[in-house]
Length: 562
Image 1 (spheres, rainbow, N blue to C red):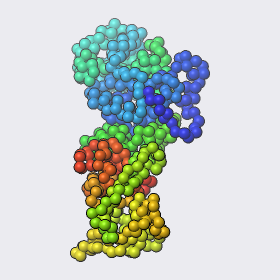
Image 2: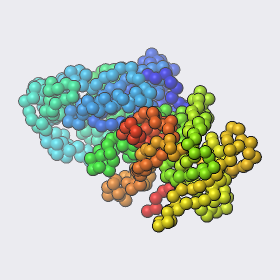
Image 3: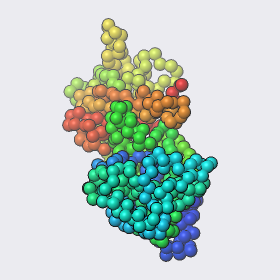
């Protein structure tokens, strides 16, 4: 695992999981050993909810000098693929974690089969010929007990024979299942003779066609934990009703007693984490793929430029709770900004340009002006930025008829150009037909250069700029929240697409960047002065850079009116 500290410097008390572990260590349970695991199903891409599970499982193991396994829960061959295995590995490592062992539930298929045989031999499991609808009906309701299957009391020998024939592939899909014999009157529906094996004649991404019966999650999970010697099986709150069954299998098989502990899942405002719903967004073209920067997937966050440490710090700050709650997305934005402020190189970019001609600056002359790369990091050094007679500034930084206390550029008004000179607007040149501003004619004060200013002038505003003859044209993708409301799954929406933010992506086809960004590579992160944090997108090509907005310099989100 990573040895980099994952938590922030903020003081905090032990969460309830840490309290349990402290008690276990104090009582020498498992000889004080702490061993966790992260068990994703390889049927999709990891998302912000998985980031929370990763932070809890790997963080707990790291905090107590323990171990954490990466185990792929690959018990459903229909939905799983090595593509997802590879993406999960990449995402886990990107967040800064390294697992102590890599395992697959499919590694344990022979042992799990043997466990099932043992349950049959003990009279605790039986082969059921009932249809799925019949089994569902037998389960009863939360307020009424279930009814026993007519196959519940099959002789052990017959069950063993049928189960072996299931394994050999003699029966079609759905014709038979293996059920645990627990308690059809239990108030916990999961304890009413759950299905533990089903027939699936499907090719498995690792075992090929060796198996045509596959264990259900409830049967595979606890036993896999036990086989690996997992001391604390940390999972989301939705599995709390599964815990009695988890413990029942361990008790009846007499195997290592892993302990399941549930914590609240990560729900973040303006995001969804349902793989089914995210898949719909991808398939219907509402986003550009699983790694679309608006998606809550780790692949999307990586492409958007979120620093992994910012995500981990967010998960840490959100805390570990016993009840489901919704975390404000502003906390995620803050955690991302906090890291980028310390690490991102500063640069100047003009997203909506208007040309400024400095009429008294020598033609065909270029000055190289030194700029700090990051004032928060003394080791970041500096760079030289070209300055010339014609520059671009932001269109919004000029106003022809400004209000009082307007400190940007206006006719007869002075501003300082960042790291350069003080200029004054002398003339506004407009298109005769449209009346649109074509360029601004300004004069500069030669003795006002930053760092050696002897002019005695005081400009109240400072603007960023780029030299027109040196600027690099670029595409800028301005990303905002994918959904316009905090809860896209609210009952008022018949479909989550109704809650989509129509302005979640706006593309600026030609912005202008300072030339130092010419060699920037995909993933490189920058603070565009006065604009926000941006990163280079993988779509970038030589001479055609593409930058993504990661997050603004401050929260400027305005809730859309209903």
